Length: 524
Image 1 (cartoon, rainbow, N blue to C red):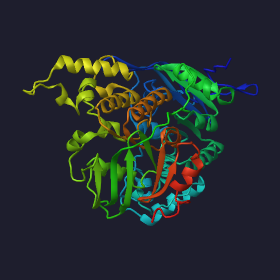
Image 2 (image 1 turned 180 degrees about the vertical axis):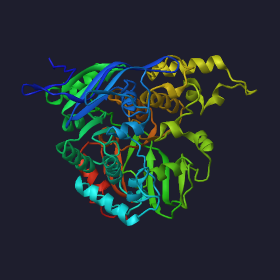
Image 3 (image 1 turned 90 degrees about the vertical axis):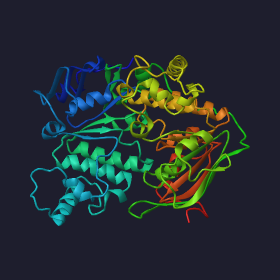
Image 4 (image 1 turned 60 degrees about the vertical axis):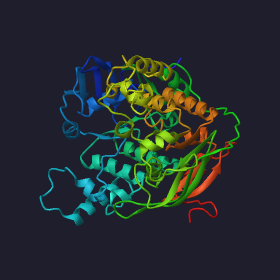
C-alpha cells in the first residue's frame, strides 16, 4: 500500500518544516462553482514538488491563489511559517514566488534583454541597452542557462523562450518557482536540458512546483507528488514510492494506457492536398518554403516540429486564417485556396484550433451555443427558424457522449475546466459530418483520462473513413496515433516517416525537429 504523507516528510529522523503551506484552502467562484475545497498542500525548501490531477481538479485555481491572481474564499496560506495574503501577482513576486505560465508572457518584438527588464521598478528612466544585455547574460551564466540576450523573442526557439521566462522570475528574486506544463511544447532533447537546469536550481536551494500531465516526466523530475481530485487533496506521496500506474489510479480511478492496437486500414481516396505553399510573415520572415503533401481517407497524418517552424502558418492557410503568397490548397478535389472558412467548412472540413479560448469557443456563450455555433443552420427550417427543442436534445446527447462535465448545457463555457472546454470543442467538430479533421494540439493541457477519451474518438473517426491531420507537440501522442509523420523545420518538411509499424522513436523525431537530421532530398 502506498504511503500518503499530508504534512511533510521525514528526512532521516528530522521532520522538515515546509517553506510554503496551504491549510483548508477553499475557492468558490461567482455562481457557486466550487473549484477548491479545503485543500491542504505543503512544499519543502529545495525540493521539486509535482502537482497532478484531472482537468477540473483545481490545480490552476490553487496556483492562481498562491500567485495572487485569484482571491481566497477561506483558508490560509503560510510562507516560512507566517500567514500571507496576496492581492496581486506583484505581492507574490515581492514574497519570492514566481510563476512561468503554459503560454509564455513575452513580447515577441523585443529582445531577450528587453523582456528581462520589463516591469522592473528600480530601473532608471533612461534605458541602457548594453547594461541590460550584460545583466541578462550574467544571470544566465549564474544559473547555467544559455540565452542570446540580443535576439528578438520571435526568433528564439521555444526552449530558449522558456529559459528566458525562468530567468525573468529569478532576476525578480523568486525562491519558489511554479511551472505550469513546462514541457508541453519541448522536444525530448529540450526537455532533458530543462530538467538538468531545474536540478541545478534545486541544488542552489530553489523550490519548484511542477504541474504536468506527463506522468513519466513527473516520476523523472520530482521528489514528491501531490494529487488533487475534484477540488480537494487526494494525498501527497514520495515519488520513489509510487508508480505511474499508482498516480494514474489516484487521479482517474484506473490505469491509463496509450498503447493502441489500431486496425489496419487501406486508404484509397485523397481528401486534402497542399502544393508548394510559401508564406512570409509581417516582418518578411519566411515561414513556409514550398510545403507539399497529401492526406487520404482512413489515415492519421501527424505533423511534428518545434513550435515556430511553420506548423501554425500551415494550418492557418489550410483553414483560411491567412493567405499564402504562393501555392494551392485542395479539399476533396476542389481548390479552396481563396475560400472563406465558412465555405471550406461546407466543403467538408472540421477544425480544432490550438488555442481553445481564442479560436475554439465563444467564452461568454453557453455550452449549448458553443456546441452548435458552426452548424446552426442544420437546426433551422426553410424559414430560418431554429428548432430549439431539437438543438437542445442534440447538445444534451453530445454532452453525455463526450463526457463534458457541466451543471447544465446553459452554463457559460468559460466556467468549465480547460479539459471539459476541449471535450466540448471536440464534440462539436467530430459531430459535424466533415470528411477532413484538422486537429491542432487536440489534447494540450488535458489530463490523462481526457487524453485517452479524445484519442479513442480520433481513432473512431479514422475507422469511419475520415482523413485526420494531427499537429501535436506531444511526441508520444503522434507516435501512438499517426500512420505517417511529417517533420517540419524552418518552414520545410525535412522528413516523412512511416509509423504504421510503430518503429519511429521519440529520439529520432527530436533529431529531425531540431534540424540535426534531414532525410535525403527533403528540406531543400
